[in-house]
Amino acid sequence: MILALAGGVGGARLANGLAHVLPAGELTVAVNVGDDFTHLGLPICPDIDTVTYTLAGRNNRELGWGVSGESWAFMDELKALGGPDWFNLGDRDLAKHALRGEWQRQGWTLSQVTAELARRQGIPHAIVPMSDDPVRSMVLTDEGELPFQDYFVRRRCEPRFVSIRYAGAEQAKISPGLAEALADPALEAVVVCPSNPVLSIGPFLAVTDIAAALRARRVPCVAVSPFIGGEAVKGPAAKIMRELGEEPGAASLVGHYAGIVDAVLCDHADPAAGQTLGGIAFHAADTLMRDDADQQRLAHEALALARGLA
Amino acid sequence: MILALAGGVGGARLANGLAHVLPAGELTVAVNVGDDFTHLGLPICPDIDTVTYTLAGRNNRELGWGVSGESWAFMDELKALGGPDWFNLGDRDLAKHALRGEWQRQGWTLSQVTAELARRQGIPHAIVPMSDDPVRSMVLTDEGELPFQDYFVRRRCEPRFVSIRYAGAEQAKISPGLAEALADPALEAVVVCPSNPVLSIGPFLAVTDIAAALRARRVPCVAVSPFIGGEAVKGPAAKIMRELGEEPGAASLVGHYAGIVDAVLCDHADPAAGQTLGGIAFHAADTLMRDDADQQRLAHEALALARGLA
Image 1 (cartoon, each protein chain N blue to C red):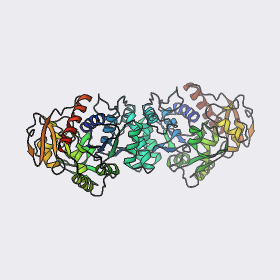
Image 2: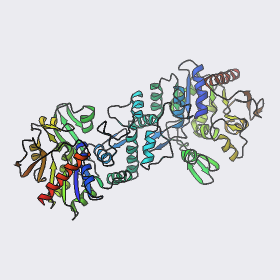
Image 3: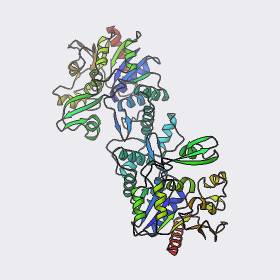
Image 4: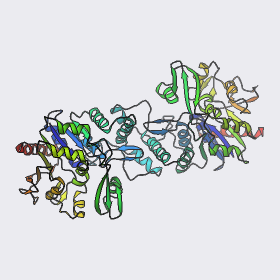
């Protein structure tokens, strides 16, 4: 049994690699909910959806997000009617949001909704939210505090990132699926996917019992760095790191993952490669995932690193 | 100023004729809300939408309902995910439902939402719901009581119609727009469109102050019969009339409209043509509306009949 912690696109890629190299049922992907929000009355879970579509082989490769075969008649009409058009909702994607809302109104937890949507899309592994409780990333910028999607989508990460707070994290509990995975005697390793340490993995660590359960684990925990050549492969991680006064590179993970992660796979050219910093051993690897083969190769390398630490 | 009372497709056709033969701003169309319901969290107003799309010239003529240029990716995906697929929601139509829900959550009344959606679609007349309060048609059938859309769409009107109750009608108030139209000194006539007397006009008359205001009006009220040759041009009116033990023809309107309507335009072949029944004078006309020209011709005839009564 392997547990992966993931945010959006980068995390979903490694999770997909793990999903393909592990036997059915031997992977649990716990997913960030800090990006979740309600839009037009619909509960939107961007990271859960990205992971689910990717593991279902349905991710939209042209767009880099959303579902394949997407169409945009809803948005066209919404714009024509003068509705809020800053957040793109595809026609197919909407069906899943509507169904999630329907199930939640019937009393289903986010864990139940997420498991059922994954099952109905034929995914043979477990996808679980990190928590069934709302944890909402709020970004303090030089223009004031912005809810995550306002910062990320509406403002395209343009305001300067000052700090982040994970609203609701104090009250939130670890999800049953994540708790069970961490307590499973068959658990072999935890893999922190190459996701944004602040936006995607930060919300996990802000929930007291998730952080405690991760610290109390008895198996190796390895991370894959999301940085290559001082930039993030995808998303605003490098910009945010620079605005926080940190160098965007694997070494910046120390401040976020110390006490949790035992070893990191980072790019060959990363200055941290070959070093041990803050108790974390940095190992060089080819961390760019261009295709399915790359995802599976990197998954194998992460598992090999973890098994070597056991 | 003309006030039209309308349900769905047949009502929308005559309302559209009136909209084209009257100067901008001189028509108020008050619309049935008895068919309204909430589906997948979205507030759906089938009759208001049919009237609005028709007056905007956007009604889908191939389907006979919904908006032109519609697509179905949402429904495809919803079916693939095993969601409820008995009620068809087009991709474009969804945008309007989502916007209506958003505005209602912000505290807008149905009147405000309806007026704004009509304005944004360029309609130069007033479209108002009969009431801002929920009035929901509940159909008692030989298989028990069914909410209207369950009877109409899910069960395709197959169960035998026993009776109807308009849940909420006792508490509901007339909408501001309908009250104002009826109180307007410039009001010249009321036109009851060729809509189902039980399903579409019944909800109006079940609301105490709507019925009272209609009875207290000082202007002629004319109706157009929805029946031609013992059948309804569209919808289940004839089947329902037969199940209620009534002959589906203009004379069946007497039991529903006596005390409200002064005169009825009915098909030339209708047995009631030329008669006066229950105080209502039945006048023969060509009541089939095949195209815009028919709609406008029938609108002119209804107005001429009303003006002749003034």
